[in-house]
Length: 367
Image (cartoon, rainbow, N blue to C red; front, side, top):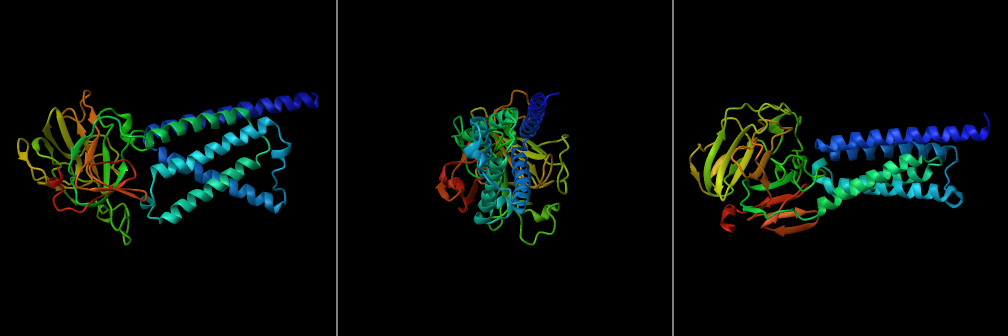
């Protein structure tokens, strides 16, 4: 076989392998993102690629082979491939900055964004150092970048629908672990019965865990554990489940996803659900009328949970599991939203990874 034919066969083989690898990675990433792991997928992609690029950069420098001459000597195809990959690796840290906040990782703002910037720079250098480029793999990068850009734009856009105004059912400072329009921000978004739900956790000194926490597997190490909850609006209690034991740590069994929970009718065909409450902590009964601010129970770790937290949503039926059930967006009065460096006083709409502060003793007075 002539050298020209060998080169052609090798090129075709590389394109096929590149396409196969890119498609598999895309499908795996989309599947995990659909299951609510978009943030973890982006973290792994950025972290592994940054380490790989760091190793290649170190090896190239050791061999004194690091240069970018191909940018001047290379073809349009090479340059466009590098631009597409660079655009993708620029979108990944942007997406992570939208999904996460420093408090999630117990990091300072400087450390959090410094790590993202360093990983981004390494990935850009890695994209620039590639001399052989699979056009099919570049196409997968382009498709992945478009999909990620659509999710980022949707995440930063306004919440769709008219929100239901409530008082926050907690006091102090809390963070939004899940909540927003897209799967990038909210793993509930794939389910119409939970689309607008929020997962909230109490924060201690602005962080997710106490500094002296021994093990995050222990419920008592999480600030949310046994935090008191209050009625966010007046209504009638229509459902109470209070007999499910709390898990110690993660529990992803699907038998009783909501765990111990309260549902109350607030009128106009709207119901409020508070879920994952502490075993035997609920203070109200079915058929009882409650007033805004009335004590309801304690945050627990019952049902399908990864840690003690509060699941909250406004829905159209009293049964969270009903096929006809749909959710409505909500906003809080009597509270302050912290989003990055900005502060906004209620009524506020929340999305991941906002913080919300409730410093008033009676936020119901803000109605």
